[in-house]
Length: 121
Image 1 (tube, rainbow, N blue to C red):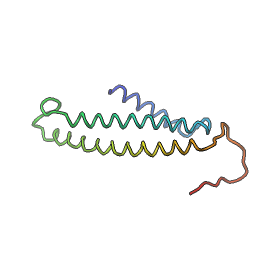
Image 2 (cartoon, helix red, strand yellow):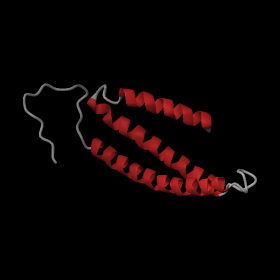
Image 3 (cartoon, rainbow, N blue to C red):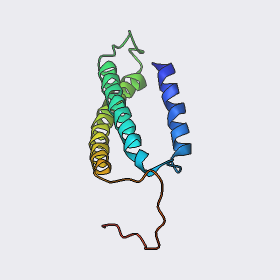
């Protein structure tokens, strides 16, 4: 799991470097779909991590009589539960963006236009 999370970090870094260069406007839906699927996986991992930490046993998984360890595990569980909620909200937001992109008639190549774009606010 540690190795896979490192791979995800590297892939996300590569995506961030490329994010300003969309090869073709019609590909935006594919990118959103991939992000949506990735976010769903991240939400799942966060939920599983929260459950694992919740079941972590003093003296088995961490130092039993170490107050900082006990409070640290509690904090991890609390924050991972919050992260799961936030990840679910992001998943919903990406889903709406994906649906919106699916309704657009994208061009495969940018078109010449002399008019200034007018987007709804």
